Image (tube, rainbow, N blue to C red; front, top):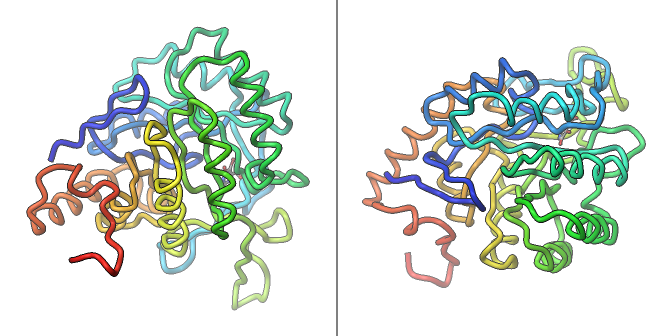
Length: 315
Ligand code: RRO
């Protein structure tokens, strides 16, 4: 299959990449993704202005079923200068997306200004959906703040920007966020971040499994697939076609990648299951996807992307 896909000025030869935060905090990890067969791009850990240690351990928990996770990492990262140095000065073999975040609007804007001043011309992802900074809400659940922030950034920024969104659960919210995003020349949206603030209990001890935040944390893995697909589909139906979509959430098999494509994803990222299996997962997922295409006699991505059928359509 020809997986060739373009977002802004970046060209991708494969569909899969790491989900933000997973396997992308250090140069060593980023390099392993760069060289993983089947990987199409690399996302860096969302960077704050200064490096952060994040929340106390344990802050990441994989369920005994090995397909689901909960995390309260709290944005551990090595700071914007570290990731900027990586994308500017390392020999990159794959398109690399620089993810930025901030604990305040000022910090986010300052980070974007710093990137612009560096001359970096690649894709930037604004993480508007971290659920794990104590005392800080997920920005993109506040529609007016999101609109204001994008307006402010686009008043000076002319580069290639994507936004990482939290999952929405209400049709009116899909309408609202899409209307805001459609006002801006965004390169893409990435849907979805972890499902914020679930709670997992250890049946042996009757205790929560995470130290920070009283055990509350972002859910990932197979359990969030339906929510992720709904968000990709709802956004694809509402966003202007120039805004591409990275589908994220619930990918453990090639069929999950295929479903994201059906809903309209241009690229697909893998979080929890990448943390569980390591970078060899990209080739496994691509092989499983190839097998589905062969079985269904699909010869081009155009036959699948966004082609989800309603029940009143022919099979
Ligand atoms: O570091 C985190 O706690 C974290 C981030 Br920034 C994010 O965007 N999503 C998530 O589940 N955890």
